[in-house]
Image (tube, rainbow, N blue to C red):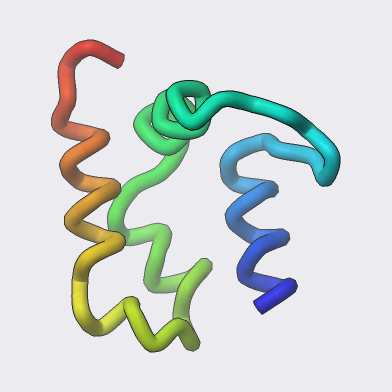
Length: 66
């Protein structure tokens, strides 16, 4: 779990102790993450095969207001 958290934080350019809003997290997901990244970052997560996270990342990437 810790390795996965570290990989996500690295991808989103977040350092432990940072305090950022969820809106900023969404913007960082939109600008730096693709659904395909989840195969590497979340490879052992029980949620990955369900597709919820990939669908959420895709939805954020498809939004134009970012």
